[in-house]
Length: 617
Image (cartoon, rainbow, N blue to C red; front, side, top):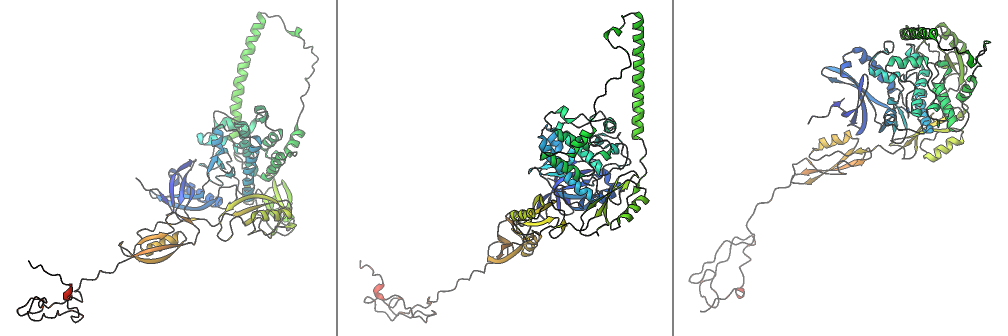
């Protein structure tokens, strides 16, 4: 039986749980912390390409910078040598759950309200990533997981695809087909993407959750992408009348062809979904009502269009009919050729010229606007928000973020500081969950996400930290996320049987445990562990002490020696018996004293009256 593959001397691979265009994902065990993790490695056939290697490392670092409850966490990165090829890998949080794709493949239909909640979970992850300047670019059911606790987890943030974005075409293999079903129109046209492209893809995922089918289907990625660019999806309520109209409006607004007509941020779309769930009017419904059109009456050309206009059927009509059929076929052929020509033009347009968005943080508003215009950006809008670090009136950031490439016609949102928020977030660290939530709500905040995390310093059930942190300022009514202590992270006691003291100390130290050693006489080899408490496999708190008993050699057994009362001389007797005669029957000489005893012969034998008498026969 082969040994499990070990990465970085720490991660023991179990089995493949997923494959992608350029990577494979394994379930693995972190031997140091004794926990399950997921390990993503670059495929061996791509690891020889230095371009893929560099991109995988760069984007692994980008993914590691994201720390949010709705995003699968990245714990570690490293490299492993396989056949003299360096294989980079990423160690991630292992999630016990299923992807949305697996649920859809099982034909699992969810309630519309539950579909909205899942979409809201995706948007929370996107809101955080967009603020960090990262666009996912590949939101789809296969990249969204539902845990057993029904929590949403978004995967593959910043993970590269198998081709660079500027080189990827819709004529590649089936790997791109899945992505094409959730592709934004600007991606299909080869333009640069921004945060609103992720919102389009989220709308496609919500559409499929509601209806059980993607918004567009086709025989090839080209045909699917063409529909994203040119065609409107079938309204969800036509496929399932039970879908609420407000949810249809939200879905279709997210899928608007023109990105300026979509939601402009994940936060805006999330707020609209929350309003719809609570029965309040949504902005999407208002936009749909404003954009509604009525059918126009037919144009009256002055003709009487009654039934009498039909002529009697005759030979001339038949010839004329045949001519019409031929003209129809010619028209259809020209239409097909024109469609292919348009399709070729759409997907072979060169990418628009782009410019890098400058970093305007801490500039005054006028300076920031001038810097943006200098780079060619003219569509600039401003919004104000609180910030504890940036001076009031100065620029905080831009959306899209600084450093991103964008076309000159991209809409740039410039965020200007209003100074610190008017409400200070109370410090509830160490408080029980109920007291912490009550304290925050009393100060006017809403309770956001709550999740557990191990802590050795804070009691189980109490708050370990919040976001925003206590003591900082935030807008009234904003959400505060809480992390609750689940107590110290348990560790398993290793099996120390047969180890030496040094080996046992090292094994315990690796598990963040200490040992108390004693010795005991034993037949086992001297210096080896013969007993431990707690037993191996027991889960204990970190820094716990394990009582260990070491075998000690038993002392040698003492040798036999003569009895201290044992005399060695026999009495002489003249004519009598050796024992000096036996009164009153013997008359020999006196019996000799027994000599040689340690007690000086004090024991002269038993008195005569205790001797047995012989028979006189």
